[in-house]
Length: 533
Image (tube, rainbow, N blue to C red; front, side, top):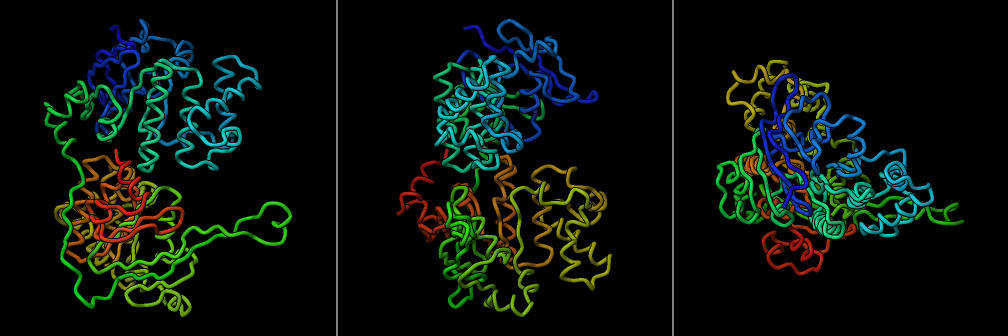
């Protein structure tokens, strides 16, 4: 069969430095090809360069689409191809969608430009496209702005926009990375259904090998700008020929936690009883003039975190797990009881004595790039907590502590190696290195408990494995306790001793982690376990 897209000898360079080197692949009509590799492997640059969407890139080679070389077309000719014959779904719809326009307006714009429809025709078609993607109440959602939709709904709106012109080829760039496991499964099923209905080909860019196994027909593996292996998914996954492919397939979270029982009588590092978080919301109609309603984000959560143990909290977006974490950090108002190392938080707050408690609890956020100040050096970022909790330290003592923290998380091998690192900025590091910096910043003040809010969801599988191994080592060496917030069941299985499952603000199941995962009692827990792809 003649390929729909035939790429030969593709090279991409920036200022003469090649980042993609002489790669070749093809996609047949109605075929699903996955382009996989770690961050920096060149997979996204390769795909977007086909449409010349990468700024300041020097692109060479050929990319034949139905007999036309995309790399030789003029900008005017390419405009007729982009969105019409080849469409793109970007990784993060919140940044790809315009926040100033409703999703319906953004889809109608495509239909008017590409199909010449009137405003009324385009709006009706936009609502129909949203309905095709399974968004509930599509007419109402079409009038919503991106921030008013959930992550899954935004991704569906992005898919509707991409399919507006019925493209022959859909480039899906990490379309499920930021989604919960059940939403990930739904988006995959949706893409498969739409691909069959419209007969289009799909180029899927991802680092999630489980997703590839479930979705794609063929896979092409990239490492550092080179295409090292390609073939049918079943063939490559069962008998990988290249060492890099074998390493990717072996990069799964492994359980290496200390299973030693908690000593009898050991006081919990954190204890909550009937913890409740609610927000006022306006009531409809005249009632809203006189009183506010109430939205309950967390309903009566009770938990214990033992010394040196990990409590995992799992649930979909909107389940209340991050709200629970913020409340335990004393960053949200709550009702109920919260104790840290035996001290009641409310009493300490009333007496203005929470600083010592805050030192015992530190947090590592989901996205280190946004949680690390771009204007501060490594030395300033990691040492910032010492300025608050140990202000008497001299600059030399503080620097020594920063170097020791960097060594603890594996960023430097010895103090002599730290000189160059201390004056660098976050943008100069990879995603895995930035997450290690975030962990070093949290550890430097000597906490007893780390709150880990989706600490590996934005990382590649190999880097994720490294960060989890680091957290496990630090827990063993320091006796740290973790409150692990995640939607990744594989991470929970690797890390957690106890597990708490949340849905719609309520704890629906809790108990020993492996027991809950292997024999779930609640239908929602069973749904989460089965949704792992």
